Image (cartoon, rainbow, N blue to C red; front, side, top):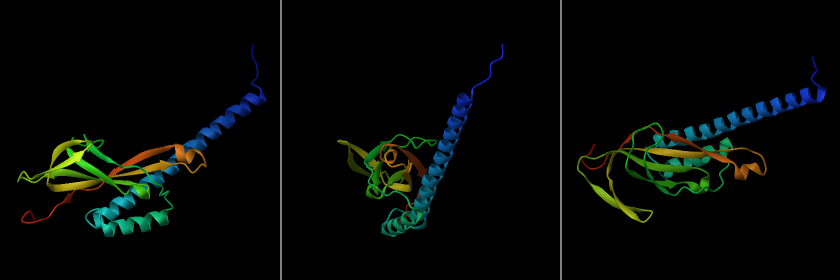
Length: 173
């Protein structure tokens, strides 16, 4: 027994398909924008060899020209086990830049051989942190959707890591 599919069912299938495709395209465009912002921040940090006043000024200028949502985010301090896809480290990373809509974390990649350590407090516990011979930065921006109500509730972090920067001080160069 053959039955035809009604016009309403066919129309519902087409509408659902169109909505899913537009959601996928909107997500891809938002991810591209967040990744573009991450790359702009990473390029500025690498250009000025650290997250300093010069790089902050250039980052702010670039983000305002890209149209990135620079609302406040909480960065905090973290003890990192590993950046996704890398070897585990035991370094203290401190987040900065939260009032500009992104977070920049300092990460020690390689310690000096002199064994110099500094006690820093994170979440109430003191851990020795070595003096960096090589370090990098982990940048976190957010994938946001420009819909009036969903924009505030729905945000996904996007991470990028800069290239290693060689620390040069004293006779370490």
